[in-house]
Length: 205
Length: 205
DNA sequence: TCATATTTGTGAAATTTGTAACGAATGAAA
DNA sequence: TTTCATTCGTTACAAATTTCACAAATATGA
Ligand SMILES: NC(=O)c1ccc[n+]([C@@H]2O[C@H](COP(=O)([O-])OP(=O)(O)OC[C@H]3O[C@@H](n4cnc5c(N)ncnc54)[C@H](O)[C@@H]3O)[C@@H](O)[C@H]2O)c1
Ligand SMILES: NC(=O)c1ccc[n+]([C@@H]2O[C@H](COP(=O)([O-])OP(=O)(O)OC[C@H]3O[C@@H](n4cnc5c(N)ncnc54)[C@H](O)[C@@H]3O)[C@@H](O)[C@H]2O)c1
Figure 1 (cartoon, rainbow over the protein chains, first blue to last red):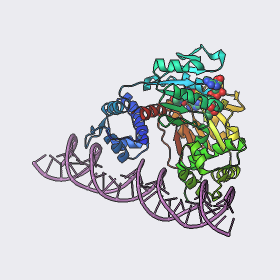
Figure 2 (figure 1 turned 180 degrees about the vertical axis):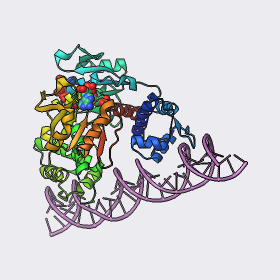
Figure 3 (figure 1 turned 90 degrees about the horizontal axis):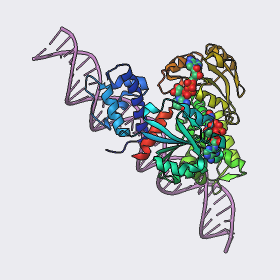
Figure 4 (figure 1 turned 30 degrees about the horizontal axis):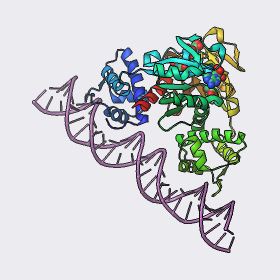
């Protein structure tokens, strides 16, 4: 399989999400044109993205929703479940832990870590909160894939260093600061402030 | 001023965020090379981005941090403050309301809207929670810029329609579903599941 | 003063990303 | 059967974005 770009992969998950909904609605077939209208990209884009993985569309007909979803999912996830660990059980961290929508999407938060004594030992929505210092051991033991940083800005680099040492290959960083990590560790920054400001700027100018 | 791409604008806010930190550290000068190292892009990229707005770098020296920050901010915000309204005071919505980091960043949440009776009338972190039906009036009155959707998936389209009718020009959508809006309304989707899955896929393959 | 070391700003080149177009495949209907 | 309207997969093209590379500007120190 040739190299697939990050952007394509993100779109594929968008297609999968939409196909899920269509399948729940008992919809069996969909054309690239209609799928494009729903997710807001061009039909050519969709056909091109799909052609990276398979040739399962039927000219004149379209794609079978279930078959397309299964095929895309097979390529991007290979039956894996993503195992996440969360750092920082504060406002945002708790919201993430409470969210029930992850399980069904092949996503599982397997442990949370905190600094504050009073939160350690509690269980939120089935996820146990451990002391931050136990993280390396538990991450290795449970073979976590990705770490989520939801600690205050000042602690984010220290947590990132620990996540890297624990062998994680990816970090989602909600703290409003850039973290330094080795090149082989992938970081996705999600800074709400920047998202709001960028959108405002794009929308108003 | 020629057209500036979305990507450039997002990076500019990243530069501003970083310059803020440098200024707090009493740092007066910075080269494109060092700024690049900190934010994780190339130095040429930084110089090119900045050159969209101004020529305030000094060869052999670099940029004055305060002057650069002020200049960039002037162009992307023009002394505006972004006024947000939030829909859905649940787990995520409450975390956003509680967050104290917005104010100082030219961001202000001016109202929240809920469906559940028991939350209406309460005040969270200085923001009043109104009944959803009052939204159009309050949005117009207070001249909100951007709407945040933090309601369940099934309600997201209905809320989006209301936001569009109220005249908002931008929507940040946290619900895991695509919303349909007129072309002149900008939407930024933030789907945590897709972010986690995409990162996993990029990191592991 | 002059050579040297930095660092900017920018046009050109390279790369990445998205779009358009079209032959071939498919089914429906006359 | 033949025609027509769809729709896919792919290739060629276009647009957007990033990187390169270098002249010009500035400072430093001999
Ligand atoms: N809440 C939001 O809507 C929001 C918006 C934008 C950005 N953020 C960012 O997300 C991060 C979390 O935000 P929040 O609102 O949940 O903050 P919060 O203060 O409510 O929670 C942070 C938690 O992290 C814990 N913590 C501190 N150091 C730690 C460590 N070394 N290891 C483990 N846990 C540690 C704290 O005890 C606290 O419980 C922050 O960086 C914040 O800037 C949050
Ligand atoms: N919490 C997370 O970490 C997380 C993660 C991924 C996605 N999301 C998405 O973000 C959205 C919010 O998530 P949450 O965890 O806060 O959910 P939640 O159920 O805790 O909160 C949703 C709130 O919206 C209110 N609501 C429902 N219909 C409304 C309407 N028409 N107008 C105003 N308010 C209305 C509900 O009463 C509830 O208080 C959901 O779409 C969810 O899928 C959340």
